[in-house]
Image (cartoon, rainbow, N blue to C red):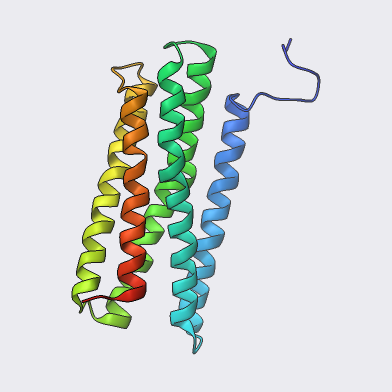
Amino acid sequence: MSDHPQGTERQTDQRVGRRAHRKALAAIVLFVGFIACVTVFEPSDLYLWMKAFHIVAVISWMAGLLYLPRLFIYHTDAAPGSAQSETFKVMEQRLLTVIMAPAMMITWVLGLYLAWTVYGFQGGWLHAKLALVAILTGVHMHYSAAARRFRDDGPRRTARYWRMVNEVPALLMIAIVILVVVKPF
């Protein structure tokens, strides 16, 4: 017997989680398949297609990088093992595995493709951008490790820490966008 009204499911239920993972996987396969089709058929504007897909992946990745520390801020207030803490664990893991990790991988693959085919890995601005994206990847890894600690009810950082860390991806994003648009060196 369920504690919630008939016909509704808790979003933290495993069945709902499996369905969400299947839908996300289908979306990722469709996205990658679309990229593959565009690559195989090599339209004259292939660069623009790859650039568009790269931007979509970057936006998805950045959304997760900006949202996940907000979840951590609220999670620090939840008692380990509480229903609220368990809900945050589900939210954090789904965000990481369903959105952030695939978006990061697609961002890197398409970004490297563009860096090679368009710029031949030349340009100081490009090297600086790649370095900042590598740092952003390190931030992603730091968040992944923190999510594992939360999942295991391990030691937690303070909400204040997560508020400060929450600014890092935004600052990196600003610098990256300036490098890409302005190409200052």
